[in-house]
Amino acid sequence: MTDGQPGGNHRWMVLGIIMLGTFMAILDSSIVNVALPHMMAAFGVTRDEIEWVATAFMLATAVAMPIVGWLVSRVGHKALYLTALALFTGGSALCAFSWSYNTLVGARVIQALGGGAMQPVGMAIVADLFEPQERGRALGVWGTGIMVGPALGPTLGGYLTDTFNWRVIFSVNLPIGVLTFLAGLAIMRAEGMEHRRRIPFDIWGFITLALALISGLVALANGAEKGWSSTYIVTCLILTVIGLVLFIAIEQEVDHPLLDFALFRYRNFTLSIVLAVFRSVGLFGGVFLLPIFLQTIVGYTTIQTGLWMMPGAVAVGITMPFAGRLADRYGPRWLVTVGVLATVTSLLLYGNLDPLSSATMIIGPQVLRGIGLALMMAPLLSAALNAVPRAQVATASSFLNVAQTVGGSFGIAVLNSYVTNSIQRHAVDEGGQFAVQSTNYARVAARLSGLVIHSPRQAELPSQLKGAVFSARTIMQRASVLGFDNGFVVAAIILSLGLPLALLLKPAEHHVGGGAPPPASDSGSTAAAETA
Image (cartoon, rainbow, N blue to C red; front, side):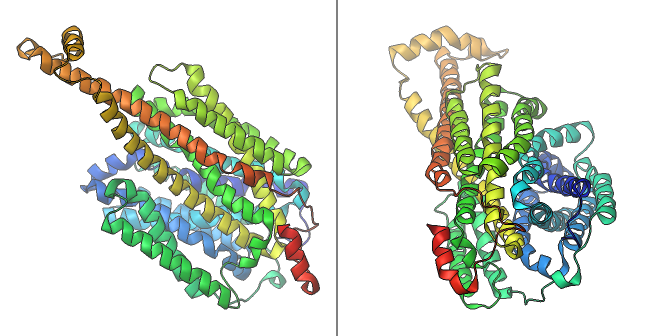
């Protein structure tokens, strides 16, 4: 991205700027959730309405990502990154000072358009600054923000909301965003005009892909609540399929497609896309299920839960740079394989979690999961971007980020639905062991009814009614624990499906200046070699 390759210190300063902006964007995807009830009260809206504060951000982020490759070709890395950063910071200001519900949702869309573009263009800048043999290390440092952000978001959001108010979770972005923008303006170097390409925008490809992404993500976000067989969700899924089919058909015909499907002949890129989805299931299996378990079943507050989640974030932050170095030296195959195995093991360990689990049982698997996810992420990013031609790096990074976004939504939807159904199933099974008229039930009721209901008039309540309440509470708690435990195991099973794919990754290929495009005279043999 520069006239002449920049020196080492300059590259790492730029990396710091990119990392900070990306971290803010990722953090804001999760920091808002704990403050939604406060926003709902402030604007007097329903639960369904306030959910759009989070949903609109997710959808706008996904829609912004695919066009980054085209935008980079028109305006360059620096201009696009700083514009995206300015959009994100301006959107944060509008969120902080929003005067109505509609203003807040609109501001979240503006914020997401900037944040959604920052992630892939940031990855592309890192790939452009560092040669393939050192990209792993750089991407490991950059990727720390992506992995740590989702874990810190709820804790920081809860602290700021409880200590100040919900507007502060947005206003804290303003000084950081302004300082990062000014530093980028001063330090980052722009490409020369010779690096720009005036290619037309694939408008119909974008429209059909946006239709598929929006419909699919809405279905995933609302499927558990509205019912997967409901007319609303089925319509969304049909639109997703239609949009995807049309997008694929259009991309095969246009001269300048939004996504060049020739990229998928590079084995490491294709495998990285698929493994990004599996990795997201592993990431959100812990980041999504564990906090809910700790709050709803164990009884911790949001801030206490965040402190319990901190060791996993620390493990990721420490391991990511080392994982990147190892990827540069040894290639991605065995690192990703070990990462998958470590993450699967951590999720299986959580399959035995209960309200009385020790600190070791809560923290140990978290640390193991953090190490495993770090060993997966840095090598996969490096392998994917090293595999494609330099001119296609921005497009490749865009669709890697789309895969991560869709994978995260898919993982949350699948696990949420499974855990809900599993809790109901276990409640029925556990309840069947206590027939109301049985001798066993009467004995349990007689022993425990007086300990459960603390009421000034509890002496007037029949012991059988007290026992029924106690039994219901006990059954539901036991069913909830089993349901969450089953959810962790299912996440482990889904992630384990990525093991064969990890073993298919090719050793690192260090082309000077990035992945080399196949020669025109031998494109067929090159494609065959890549997929062999």
